[in-house]
Length: 150
Image (cartoon, rainbow, N blue to C red):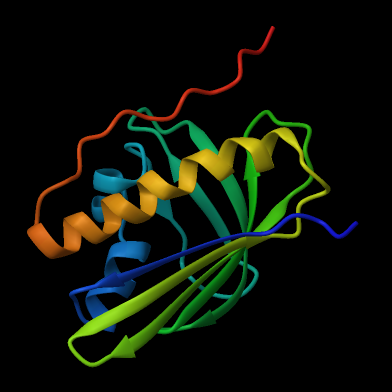
């Protein structure tokens, strides 16, 4: 059986440039990505981190590919997890008055804890991003439940 893959799409009433900025701006990601601020210099080989307000990292990875305004591919590893890194691809496609965002998360080592967590976690992120860009206000929804660890 092949490794699992997750894909999410949203048609957002915005420009590709504004969508790109929302994906790459720590001030904006903090408003729709569970309070996490993304940091990177967005060049292949650069690190990417999603940080809590106290500066602790929740998600880390490496930028694999960048086409400014069109595409970002990076690895994804949850801090403290023993799961191997997976891959996230953000694709931006202009479509007249809207922009199509396709987010693909793949390259998992099977149905890992990370896979199960992000399968529930990406919908609120994509919905929050769309809402923020279309209304200028964050979408206030609770974070999904995570598996208890002991």
